[in-house]
Amino acid sequence: MTTRGAKVITRHQRTKRLLVRTISVFAALSGFALLALSPSRPLLANPPTNDNILLIEVAAPINPVIASFIAETITTANRQDNRAVLIELDTPGGLDTAMRDIIQAQLNSQIPTIVYVAPQGARAASAGALITLAADFAVMAPGTNIGAATPVSIGGGSGGEADETMMKKVANDAAAYARSLAQKRGRNQEWAEEAVRDGVSISAREALDLAVIDLIAENREDLLRQLDGYKFIRDGEVMIFSSAGSQLVTVEMNWRQKILNALSNPSFAYLLMMLGILGIFFEISQPGAIFPGAVGAIAILLALFAFSALPVNYVGLLLIVVAFILFILEANIPSYGMLAIGGLIAMSLGSLMLIDSSEPYLQISRAVIAATVLSCAAFTIFAATMVFKTQKRHSHFGQDGLVGKQGVADEKIDADRGRVFVYGEYWSARSDTPIAKGQTVEVVEVLDGLKVKVAAITSTNQSADFEKKEAQ
Image (cartoon, rainbow, N blue to C red; front, top):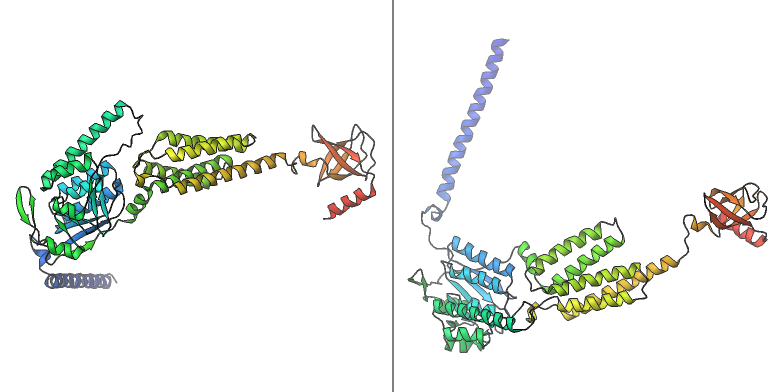
C-alpha cells in the first residue's frame, strides 16, 4: 500500500512538471511571436517625433478650469513629443491669474504653440489678446478682431485716490507684461502696450499689417499649409516647424473638468447658492428631513468653489443671507408681510451686487435674478400664509381636540365624579348638573388631571347625529 501510494504521488509530480514545462515553452514562443509581429518603432531608443498636433477649442471666458485644462494639455503634448499645440480661441477675456497660467505654459513649452482666433466672427479680447501674443505662431481668421486688453477693476473699491493709484499700478504692470510678450515673440511692442493702456482693438487685416500676428488663415487646413516651413526660436536656437503629414487630434475636457467649468458660470453658481440656502431653510423649518439639508450643504459647497474663481462682493452675499433670515422670521412671526418685503429688497440688492465686475461675461443674468427673487418671494409668502392658517385652525388632535366632541355617560356624572366615553376613550368627567348613565353628552372644557367637563344633550336631533357619526 505504501509503495503504490508513493508511485501515485510520483506520477502526479511528473504530470505537474510536464504541465509547467509546456506552459513555459508556450509563453516563450508567444513572447518571440509578439516581438516578431510588433512594429520596430517602439523598440527604438530614440523614437521619431509624434505626428499629432493637439487641438484645443476654447469658446468661453478664461477661467481657472480652462487655464488648468490648457496647461495640462500643453504639458502632455510636450511629454508625448507632439509636433505642436493648436489653441482655437474665441473669448471675451477672463481672469488675470488664469491668463498668466496659460501664458506660462506657452512660454515654457518645448514644442511650438499656435493660437488661431477662429471661426470667422470670433475675437481675442482682453486676456485672449495676451494669450495670442504669447504664442509661437499667432493666426487669425478673416472677420475676427483682437485687442481691448485694458485691465478692469474687480475689487469693489470706493473710487477714491487710493483706487486710482492702484488701477494705475495694475495698468502699468499689464502694459509691461504685454510689451515683454510681444518683444519675446518678435511682435509689435507699441501696439501691445496701446491695447492695454488705451484698450484699442483691431481687425485681422490690421493685425497682420501691424505685425501683431503672423498669418490670416481661412480654416485649419489653410493654417497648417501656410505655417509649414515657418521658423520659431527655442532656447536661443532657430527651429523650423513642419506641418507635412501631421494630424489634428482634438482634446476635450474630462467629465470632472466639464463639471467644474460649468460651475464657474456666474448664473449657475448663483442658482447653486440659492438652492443651497433653500435646502438649509427647509431643514431648519422641518428638522429631521435630512435630504433637503444634505442637498443644501452640497450646493453651498459647490457654490463656494465657483465663487472662489469669481469676483464676489461679500456685501451682496451678506444681503442675500439676511434676506433668507427675514424670510424664516416671516414664516414664524406674524409681521403682516413687512419682514417678507424687507427680505425681498435685501435679496434683490444682494443679487445685483453679488458679482463685483463690469465685464459682461462675469455678470449674473438679470432674467435669472428676477426669476429667482420672485420665486423665493412667492414661496415665502405661501409658506407664511399656510403657517398662519395652521396656527389659527382649531386643533383636532390631543386634549384641545376634545372640546365639542360628543360622547356617552358611562356612569352617573355630577360635580364630584363621573366617567364618560368620548372619542374612543374613557375620561373622568365632571358636570355642573347631574347626568344619568347612558345619556348623550358634549365636552365643553378640558380640565387638569385628564378630566373633562361635559354638558348633557337633550336634543333628539343632536343625539341622532352623534349616533350617526359614531356608526361612521
